[in-house]
Length: 257
Image 1 (cartoon, rainbow, N blue to C red):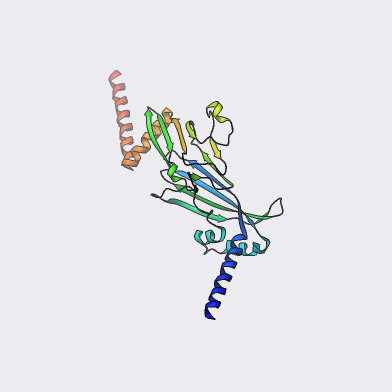
Image 2 (cartoon, rainbow, N blue to C red):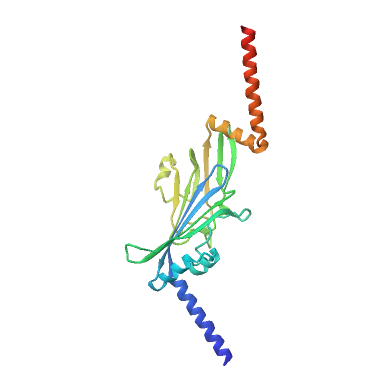
């Protein structure tokens, strides 16, 4: 008798969990990766879900519950609610998660958007090929999408967008981006961002771009590097250089006078 009750209870809990899971259906995932010059990336992921009529009030309660963690939401929504750009050696930082309010779509279906934003280190590597010329290579190991038979592949109904740093020029890219279409014909001139649509194979993903730094930017980068190493002592050194230059100019003017 007890065994039957345990079995019935387990079946009931499984049934309830399946209903709860089915009440939120994912319709689209948009992952946007903004690359930074320091090899980090700022990631913004928007997961759009449909909410069944019987679950609208439950979603509102879950959204108002401040104690729910990302793991709790993953149990409610499914495994697609996860960080898709991640470096296992460094993790992520500045993580924010915001489940948006339900809204009625044009199809009459209640929808909501779940927003995740975070930063990741070592998304790119950089080498200097010439004075003020830097080559950046995207690290494909940070891609955390679905794994197919051939390797990483974009999940169904997923869009991956990469925004390049200002002044970038793409030198190598694979697979060919879906957006902008036909940009390869112009050698990706003036292309500032690229996108791939769902089920695109990413097992051999390659993105290399070149940045030619201006002289003012090079000077600024130099002083930033000096400040990183010397800290506040940098200002003392700069002040001393200015004073010495002023004294040199003064004595030269006295001598010439």
